Image (cartoon, rainbow, N blue to C red; front, side, top):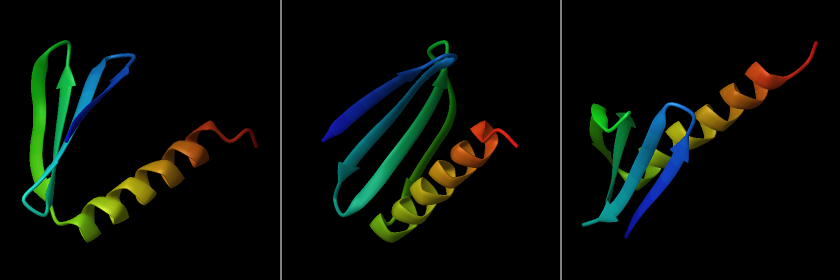
Length: 60
């Protein structure tokens, strides 16, 4: 199942199929990165991104 998340500079497409997760990062419709991960790796990367985003927006 493919999901697209729009953000300020472009979009991120996440597609789950065949027991893997494909992550495509686009900037103004230009593909910047395309990788396929195991479900465990995708979970780990997702959690790391969430932690980094929360840290980056935390006011000290």
